Image (tube, rainbow, N blue to C red; front, side, top):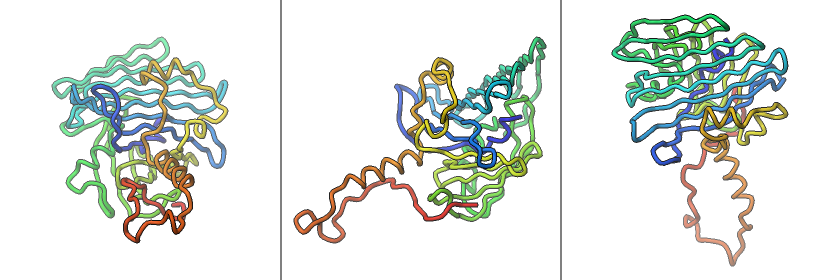
Length: 293
């Protein structure tokens, strides 16, 4: 159930990496309960140019000791975002659950292991159904795309229980969140309402699980998300292939831009440039002054 709070953590921004894979997004988000920092999410989206497949991978951790909860997901979809497979794992205290799911010819075949219990799921998948982890990609590919005052209705597979649910995403007007211009999106899925703050590139800068008091915020450095909470480099390497640097996102780019600007020498008569002839920095993140609510 923890994962349901973070369905809105879906993003789209290009940054090339690897021989055949383009990293579309990679970032760390801190998880807050009220003002208390309780965990983090590491997520990566990439496109395998050789196989023509999208891949979503994430690792989530909250709590400590007996209250610790971890979740991981690796999901694969084709170039049209039709599901191919996914592996989901969660560990809450001493209770564990894994789902190994595969899709073929419009059907889902999954093996669910919960403790010592093994369950097999076989079901037909209605046309247009996708894995919920790819929601923003589907919104960006829709006829309306991502713009203000639009209503996107869908049906998606909740990876944590291999079940299909109807959902709705209402895109509001553009506002600001943590100094960036964003759209505030109200998403309803599994009878739970979420707010997400998404920029025009599709990057989610934050989420709010309404009524739960749980929020997330994308951060520029991994340490801001993990704080003093331990993590296993070996687990991350097994899941992601390496320990994610978390640099393919707007928060990191904005920080590096500010650092570069701070290092620039002050203009002088000798160093100045004629009006209109200054350096133009491409892909500069949109900025604003206030934080969205």
